[in-house]
Structure formats: C-alpha cells, structure tokens
Length: 553
Image (cartoon, rainbow, N blue to C red):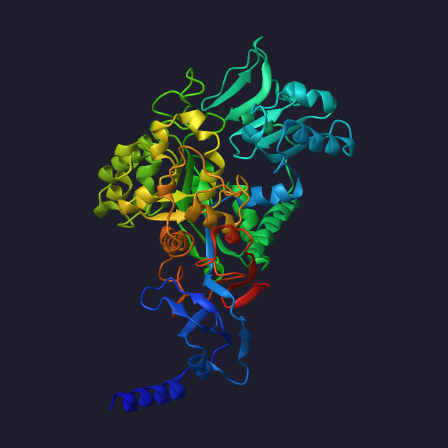
C-alpha cells in the first residue's frame, strides 16, 4: 500500500508539476535548509525556485522550452552574500593605484615611483591598499619617504583599513596642514620629533587632505561602481551589503539600476549622522526595488578607528604605545537622537566598532535606545541592529549581543591579518575576546559574515577559510591566535548565507536553497565542506546565478 501511495503521489507530481524556465542538474548541493540539507537538482521559474531534490524528480519540471544546465557534479551553495563591503572603494581600488601586496617599504615606494613617472607634474596621485604590519620594521611610511620620489605631485595613499593615510609635503601644503593645525575630533595628525606633521593622518584627520582632491565626475564614480560589481559577481557574491553611502552615491546607484546596468543584489546603508541619514529617516526605507535587487533601510555610523593604526578605542592603553587608548570618532550625544528616530521609523542601524571600549559604548547606546523607544512605539518590533566588526570584546560584553538581540557583523579575514600584530597592540590577555566568533555563537549571537573589501581582498573563499581554520593563508598560527574560536564549516557557510539574509530581513527570500526562495546560487570548483583546509583557498567560483540567470561562468 505504501508503494502504491508513493507511485500515485509521483504521478500526481508529474501531472501538476509546473514547467520550469531552467532546470539545473547534477549538482553537489548544500541547501542550508535543515529539512533537506542535500540535493542534486533545482528547478527555477522566473526568479524563484520551484523544486529542490533528485535529478530524476527534476525532470518532471521540464517542458519544450525549459533550459537545462548540467553542473557536472560541482558544489553549489546558496548565493553568497558579502555582509560588509564598500563597493565604490572596491572599484576605485581596481581603477587607481592598488597597493595591495606591497610587502616592504621599498616595494611600496617602487609602485609609487612607477606611477609618478607616468603622471603629469602637479596632478594628484591617489591609491589604497598598503599595510605596514608585515614590513621590516613594521613602521608607517613618512612624507619624507614620498617627497624623495614625488617632489612635484600631491600624493595621498590610504592604508588598507581605510582609517589612516600617508600624504607628501605637496599634499599637506595644499591642505594647509602645518605644525599648528589642531587634531580634528576623532582624528590625529602624527608628528615627527620636531613637532612637524610626518604625513600620517588617522581617521577624521584624513579629511583635511581628501577634501582637496579634484572631485570625481559622476561618470567616474559610476565606472568605479560597475568595476566593483563586476569583480564581486566574478568572485561568486550574489549580494553585497554596502556599508555606507552619501546622497551622491545613492543617486549613481539608482541611476545604474534604472539603466539595467546592475545584476548584483544590493543592501545599501546611508552614512550617519548627516544628510544621507536624515533623508532616509525623512523619506523612509526602499524595500526590494528593481525586482528584489535594491534595498535601503539602514544607517551606518563609524564609532572608532582601526587596531592597526591605533585608532580603535580601548578600555586600557595600547600595550605597544601606552600613551594612547585610541579614540571615538562620533560623540554619543549626536548618536542618541538619530538612534531613537531610527527605531520609531523602522530604520536599521549598523555601527563600526572595533575596540573593546567602542563595543561596550555602542551596546550601552543601543540598550539605552531600546529602553527609550519601547516596542509599541517602533515601526518594526525587532530592529535587528548590528555591530560591524565587533573585533575586540571584553568578556562581560560577549553575552550582551544575544541578550540585546544585536547582530555581530564580522569579517573572518580580519583575524588572520590582524593577529600578526594584535598581540603587540593588545597584549595576550585581551586576545581572549578578539575575533571571538565561537564564543559569540555559544551565547546565541547571530553572526553574519563579510569581507570589508577593499580593506581586505574581498574573496569569499578567503573569508570561509579564515573562519574554519583561523590560520594565515600560508597555514600559520601564532601565540594568542585562540584556535578554539574557529567555527565549523556548517556555521561558516551560514555566516554568508542564511545569517546574512536574516541580518537584512531577507530570510523568507534568501539564504537557503528551497522552494519559493530566490534562485541565487554560488557554484564552486571544489567541495569546500569536505576538502582539506588549504585547498579551500584554491577553490574558485565557476558560475554565479542570480534570480535564475547565469550572470558569470
């Protein structure tokens, strides 16, 4: 009787099955759906999944015009989301002087010298990506270093983390930065032993020089946007969550969508406090525009600097520079009214917080806002506010994320980059709360994963590898790296799929491969759930599918 019932069910399925636009067969599919964790085939109609299961059963959804795609045993996961990146910065890195991988001061200067030789005298030269922590000695460059090779051009090169930059004398003179220029709030002008600016500008001090750059045209900004998007899709990201934009950026993004130039899904945040946040609070959220390709419901605030440049605000002084504890880059009294209004208007908030002082303070401010605006006064009962980075946490603050229902938006590659210098910055004791993924998970915290590109390279396989191995890309693991904070491959995959979807209020549409969800798939060259850890780094995206459309192969 059971077999007869099964056959009758199969017949019924065959009779009533929808005709799919595309059937994808022969996949090694990890669905991230606990009810059906593995599958071979997917059928898609329009932008949505209508079937997940066995190859044989998928055939029932084929019609005369159905496209059939053979994955030939490739590993398929839900379309991966970069929960924290800066899309214009990614494109600009591709289009300007990319200083990634300059592993010595000499290599850094050689790249700059090469660009100077092909640039007209007096023209600005800018770039990004250098980081001195791997140089020997690991010291910041100075304006004197740059003056020797760029005496006639203003030059300004942003550190990889975006929280520090080096400028030469010409650039400092254009900006009017002298020994008498005061440090701006939330920034610092580093000085030499004679009290003169040495060229290094931290956090908000960068704006003193950056404000003098020739303003890029809208066409140049769009070129950067599209260059960044092309790179993201090629890497296998199906969605990005863009961590901050001003009003000009938003106009460029919307125009590109209007002109059908963007295939990537985007969750866009507005910088705040300021005009972009004010307009979002006034006009309200944009949800699922352009066929679920664009949402803007989030305000992004930056609350401190970075650990590498000692701008992250710590509860105690830096171990390797005890005269400083870092600094906050926003005044709490300016955040409070914005936070309260965001709760009333149904706007999500995400805040950059790296140091343990910053993380404690932002959790205090969030908790204060939640109490000041109770659920009955909110447009959305569950606001899903986020802390971006959450890198250094005091032990007593670890459980507060789950208690407050605050999401930790973390970038695993930061750990395998920073842990080379974090012991010097923090000392061994504070490393117990550094990049504490597993400890946060044990408290019930939801972690969404990102890359922070162009701060890091922005590759999903590097992020996945870092999360599961907690080793450098060369397999290294030093004292104080706390290997117990590595997570399982299942948890790591959730960071970039279902957890990322939850962090953007998208769990009903994205994050797993199951019927009725959007047909977004990242197809990989190897089985990242089983291969040895080092092989994860050699794994590449072989196909990107967004809304059932193959947008990269």
